[in-house]
Image (cartoon, rainbow, N blue to C red; front, side, top):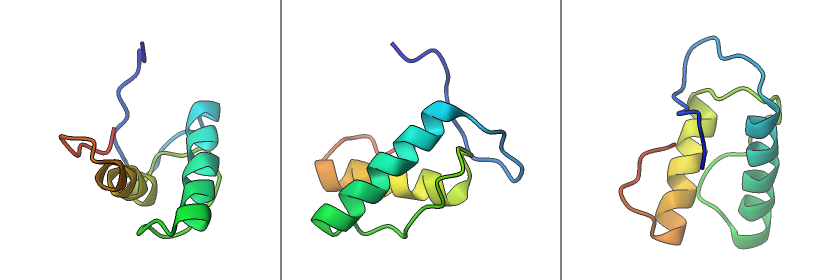
Length: 68
């Protein structure tokens, strides 16, 4: 079970788990034409990463679409 709850911020801190999620979201985006923009794989959970997570949740039919 995931112990952290992620929310975007203007100055997020580096997290290796977030970096791995960003890599996987970019892979899905390129392979299956995801509707989110390419992410900088910097390990920071900012607004773009949150929007990409929401886009993935919509793509997979995961509800509610929360971005976390």
